[in-house]
Image (cartoon, rainbow, N blue to C red; front, top):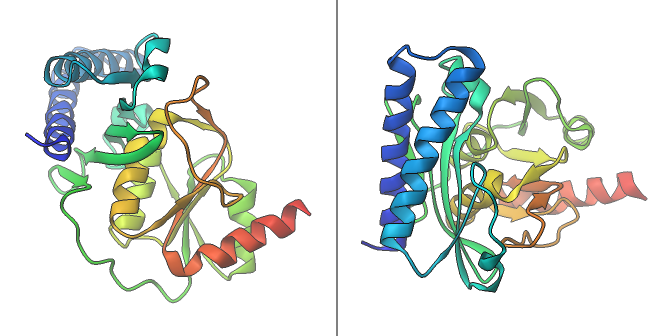
Length: 246
């Protein structure tokens, strides 16, 4: 099984596990999120250690091990990206399974278990980007839209679209449901490794909002910002962000 096939398989199975946990009706509210995180994390981490024992591993739901810093290949996973949306049975939550090679998000799969009966978007099965909307659609947090995204959307005559998890937002750009995902409110490597790998494989622009590359497997996994967008918008968006900082 290739790395891409493994990532997709694990993301899909973890998504099914999460649906089963929710449908068991044994948990509600925050307890549901904790149960889902713990169950999916146990499956993903055990499976990766069994299938790729020589690789490093970083998960949102496990204590970090600095041994990964010496490894070229590191799996970076988020068992439930969008815990609130998962509990509310919305479609905008995701499971992330990504592989960083030399600090670059190379391989990944993002499962959207509540979308279209279960969807997995992956780096080894590529489609053509749909035609963009006449006015660019900017994906933002449902509750805390990034100020840069608001300002850039206004300058470009764009539309703000609220959505849940980072993975769901990134995949909405891949799927042609929006053109731009600009985030500046702070994230972690597990929030974006798999989505960035998938988005880049599909020909989208992926970078920090200052235009610099997004690097993974660092000692501090905090990532302040990112931009995922259709390539034809990248220069204009980055220029507008720079003009705000000057």
